[in-house]
Image 1: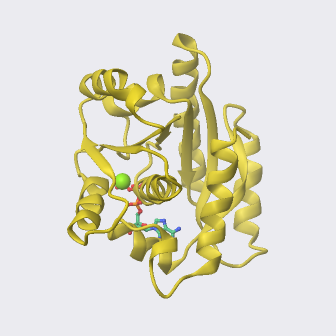
Image 2: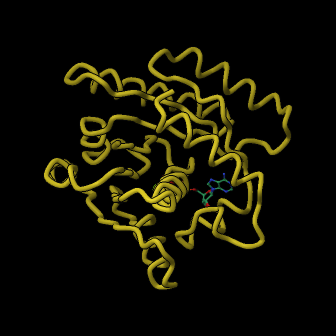
Image 3: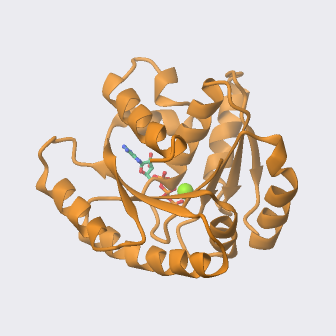
Length: 216
Ligand SMILES: Nc1ncnc2c1ncn2[C@@H]1O[C@H](COP(=O)(O)OP(=O)(O)OP(=O)(O)O)[C@@H](O)[C@H]1O
Ligand SMILES: [Mg+2]
């Protein structure tokens, strides 16, 4: 499956979730290719840190910030991988548009603040454009960096806001703001690989991955 993790809004956790998903799938025995579609190269740097620390499984990672190159490479190499995870930068770019043409699933992380929710409208326009030239792109929105309080009204409001954007299916799982995600992500590790283990972070990640790959 090809999954693109994208949002024109910056800093919403695209790279964090791309690394978590890619490493988790590889730990389940899948052949995973992580593509960093951002010139900043944050995902590639995290995977380099993982390799440096000799962590297994190693993750294959390539950086293609140029859309046409990303598209050509993925089209040529896709058959070799079980999963391809594409992390694209926080703005409208050729890499973002290429990833929407290639992906089976688009995952849009957003944070529980109103301006992030509005950025979903930009993404909805891009999803409409992608649907006009291809079939079969499923688009999911997931709340990331949610208030750790279970009953946060912010979180409930964000869920309601996604309901207003028909292009997206709101994933019932929520990723909360937890140190485990930021600590693990920078080192190219899944939350299940760091100590001390944060069981809540591990459970949230598993609950995110399950419906995406089993086609909710
Ligand atoms: N669930 C989370 N809990 C705690 N920290 C998080 C979480 N998700 C992301 N972060 C932190 O928030 C910051 C931004 O995350 P990240 O770099 O993944 O966002 P991004 O959308 O990829 O940004 P950019 O648009 O610059 O590519 C990072 O410092 C990251 O560690
Ligand atoms: Mg990023």
